[in-house]
Length: 283
Image (cartoon, rainbow, N blue to C red; front, side, top):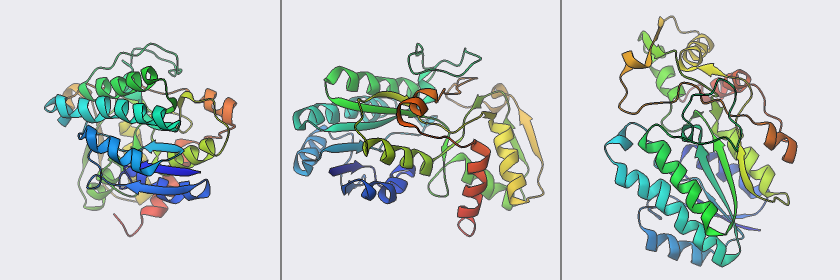
């Protein structure tokens, strides 16, 4: 199996570099080699790769900045996946693409299933939903994995930001009225490798860890895990005043991926402990 990995230097992409060779020969690109805002480059690179599976781990992920750059966010997250999907169909390849809990409006109080109605509240969520729609409309074989609150010991993410500030002795004020599922990038990569190594019918699946928490409780768990002696104060979303509105509740139901692929999702706090160990000396 020949695999084209787009976005090898992102959070999930870095983990995929390690996970995917177990199931195939990997050709990987970074942003310097393939800018997803350049649709002609996408066509050229995908055609040259002649892959059996295309894994798109690249995206515009700056949720707040997307409010100021809606055209760029929509091009990268909405337009580019559609072009990749067209090329996947032409090649007869499976397209694996990652989406987000932010395609939902947060009005539910129980976990979102794959078939629940979407209703993004911000530009980022709208652009990711546009990408999903373009892939579904293309006629290609696809696997869309929605995940949430991605973090790990590399890149730019909530976990590293909180950890670095805590170790620097800074007191923290963290939103306590948004609930979701922190999910590690290595879990998403491992799930990807497991699924594409099987005969998959494709479709949309939620790939998240088990349980749920708020950003505040997530931050407190990080601080406690580090043994840092700083104060963590809960605040409201209104007090935080982020440019992009977030869903108040965006927990994803992962029962479908467990049933169809026997994917066992550990609890989010267990994975946090492992991430703390992996990050020691890197923060």
